[in-house]
Image 1 (cartoon, rainbow, N blue to C red):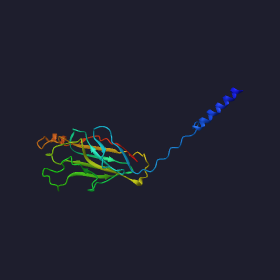
Image 2: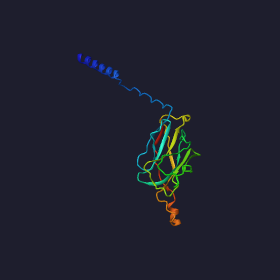
Image 3: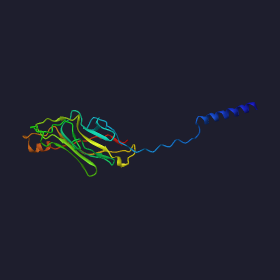
Length: 212
């Protein structure tokens, strides 16, 4: 009888300790619903090819992206069509343009007349697609190393879109082309010149963009 009484006492003690430590089949706490987003979160794409990378001047609601090419590849200009989803708008820089020249390409002719038009263009098309390009006009200007920020574009957060934290905001480069290093000379055969003057297709990697 003494042994049975002791065993029951120990069983009761173990059960009470288990309950005190939170043992048992209690249900996990429910995961809170995501709150309203107030800006962007962007992760640069991997690799060293053509890509859009985040500039240090970016803020929570303004994402400045640099178009960077592979180091050592010489080009004379680049253009792309970038599509953004709802919740993302394309912004403009201080000069009112949706593209910014970073100073890598020589945009002026041999005369270097600061008043002449330059081949720096951008605009938003139907479907929230930004068409942007920057090009050298002069054959006399040398091709440039593309392994730097060749130009910049701006994405702005649309606070009226009702986005939640963590919502994916996929960006799509529909098309991208570059003017290659060799565009021929005035003395080239016309058929050769025609081939050399054609822009070359490139693939531009885009990072991961989400609401934050």
